[in-house]
Picture 1 (cartoon, rainbow, N blue to C red):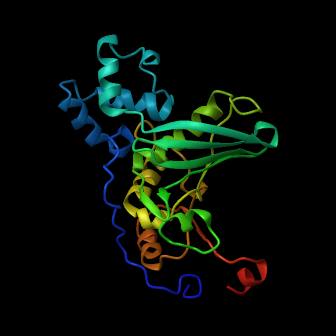
Picture 2: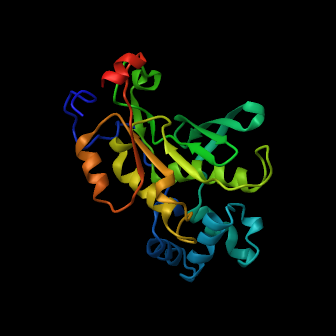
Length: 257
């Protein structure tokens, strides 16, 4: 491990100054906290489970599609617990449309990317966990640009839900399908944004309607080698796959590492 990450790194990475926090989203909260948030809006707590079913199970965020909720409270619920966190700026496709890369603008103008890839036996989305990256790996363009800020759990999950929705609605060639895999290999060092990333992983693996009900083994967390955080990850009790990124310019050095 020391060859991969020779310089000691702090366990806590401060948010760059001058940026506010993203709005609170349903995906940032567990089911109990969602109930409290709904009650704070003056609505019955059981609406939280209904809203969670729409978002995590039906993959719906449009109030008009939430027909089991009274029409008079749909907009209030969505505005209070499902604010728009990411906005598509540009989408590019390859492999006859089965690979789709989306550039997203976050609430504060920061830009991140996700990539949805459909294969014959699975569909994988590669998500970002930070806007920019503070690891400064010499062969990574993102790292050279520096860290803008950590992303929230909700911002991470919104990328995943968008991919799941695209698959379920048949927007990717091959007909309707299911998003099966998530890889944290987009922008950022996932373990440097540990709390939000673990929160996102929990939303992915929790059964519906609390989460997306995905297999933990189909979720891959990539790291340049933050050893204390790797150890902490092993204590979470979530059997995700860990990928160690060997940042080197050629295969010979990668093999040596």
